[in-house]
Length: 542
Image 1 (tube, rainbow, N blue to C red):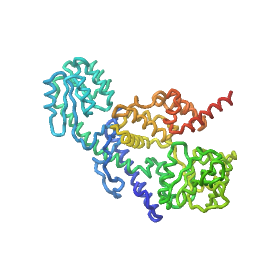
Image 2: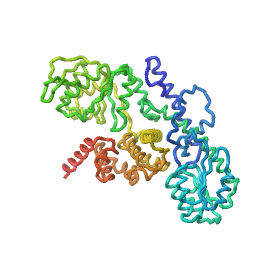
Image 3: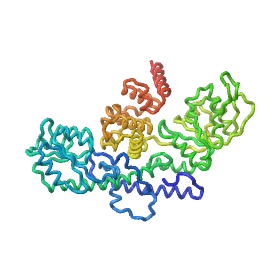
Image 4: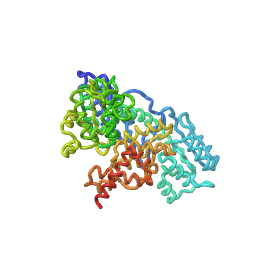
């Protein structure tokens, strides 16, 4: 999106409409390109490379009516599955592994050109080391070699990087070995002496893909940059509507209620509201209401004076006072007790706070954003939440969709998190295989974006490959398709699904609650509370 701050009332509506139309045009172009271009390969890698995301610019700045050339549109297929090397390395890297020295010299001579780099190895062991070091686009492997067969070498290479193109060479062709080679991941099976014209055509094809890939990386990064709204990634219709509402509301709100499941990004939405509001120069102070002890909640929100209670050895500034001239985020506001709800209502009405132990009220100027994953209307009906406070908070309500409701954003989110964690950990993680993407797409993501973030963060940290594959994903994602979970849990409540998924996660990590909490993206206190509720429910049932 263009222009994340400094909005005026005169330009707001026009800017939103222009951004929406521009982004929609780009997305439609990408969708068309994906249908027209390179064939899908079950093991191919998404266009992603550590260190390639440096190009600045915006494709949303294209004027209405401007024609995008076919090359740009063709290269924009960011789900094409073509491996994307760094733009700084425009040369095709080839590794040839053969125990025949004369044949290696022949291949090096045939492929010798300015934009092709050929490396050779006289045995499989040296060849595998060379593959690990050079990460080539094409590997030529002799089928029969001493110490390790070509098929075994092929398996090692595919295990290292499923996207690498491997061609087996043999002096004795057999249909059985050819079929076996293709089944194990070989891109082709050629007989010796190698047909020079056929080999050159394959190299030219890879060079063409390489050039398209470099342009694709640039366009993909531009799309990723322009699909972010105040650090929220998404280009689905549901998220565009959220962005639209935030931009409309931000300049005017006094109270906003953000709703949605745990992990959908309510805190990021709150930051966007603050950033685009007139109070953006003031502080954004967050209070996690679920983590505040009830006896200290009033002191936490409004502060206290020295001597107000045992242990109050000095004056304390509360959340509302600290956020003067700024914004307060009351996260999980549904966890506040009824008595605190009453005191909060008064502050919202009068914009005045009274510290614990002080008879004097103090005026504050704050905007309040309340966030919750609970159904506050149902809580009002059950008399667990004050009706007047609910209406005060929900003057404007923005609901963030669950990840399962915007799965078209998954590829962008995957690339965003892989890029972020690759840079954070200093690891050359370049992408994710198509079959791993398919497995992630089948999962129902009860933990939403936070669960996806934690899964990819863990995978990027633990993987030894430059390409994330199915084997790198957590066991609970691999062992049971999400479709089965959805079919079995159709009639469960949200809290029951939460408990079921938490117990399954705990089982998958061998009972390690710290690890389970990290993968779920919740605090250990939250995990213990879920488990406690689960045990209580089981005890009641028995």
